[in-house]
Length: 346
Image (tube, rainbow, N blue to C red):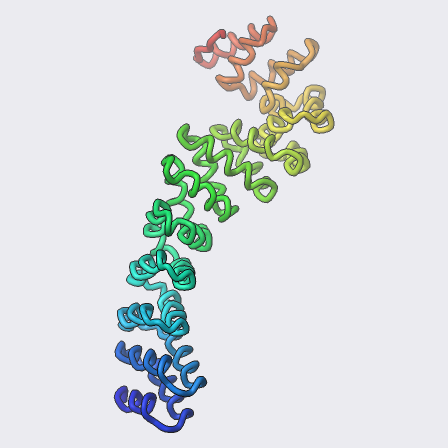
């Protein structure tokens, strides 16, 4: 019975018996066994028995023990604190979030770090409290560390903070540290004028590691221009992947790659972009239309017009209209009429 085991664990003269009793107690789904384990872990005169009790305490995994484990967090014995925290974290027990959050601001750095690690291990249930702690100077650093460890489940909540000037910088730092799982949310943030700049800066800082994801996302027309600008800012690490993307079967990706490459001040990467005119790859020309409107020779204007007819957009037509080139202006007005668009002569 529980009472008999508790008696053996605390009173028996034989340390082997006490250790065996402690191990057996930990397997009983009885909350009061936590008190016995804490007592043995802190007061037994045998280091081996104390270690056994501490290990047993860390392996407790039944919900009824949670209040007692939370109490154990407040003991002065660091090994007991560690064991109780590990048990609560392993259970991913939401009711432990509050006590751990309180401990996050503890003056004892070890206890505060233990709380942060435990909140990270609990995972998703910790996210709202950790997000709130970003506004607390005393807790923000450890809260950030915990959110980074939680990773992908925290991304959506963090992305929502990008529009708040008080937390946008912290949120961007954490999203960057989380890495690739943050990329879709940051790309989505490009579409909101309040978050475009910080999202773009964060993606740029993430650099080479996310280049393939950015190139893949060029297919989306609403973020293509922003993504091309980010790839231009990433620079050298993006060049070869972008050159390969010119041959993509996805015309949106290929056109977006051409747009990014056309913005790089590198004659070597411009060669295959320019070659689209002679090979009449209209999707490439349409993707990099700002470059071609500025640079193409008159003999290739008809190819440029064909790209407008096949892949034209409102912005592309306006670029033609304001190009100062008679043939392109006529083509832009014709395209606008046929597609029922009003384009503006600037």
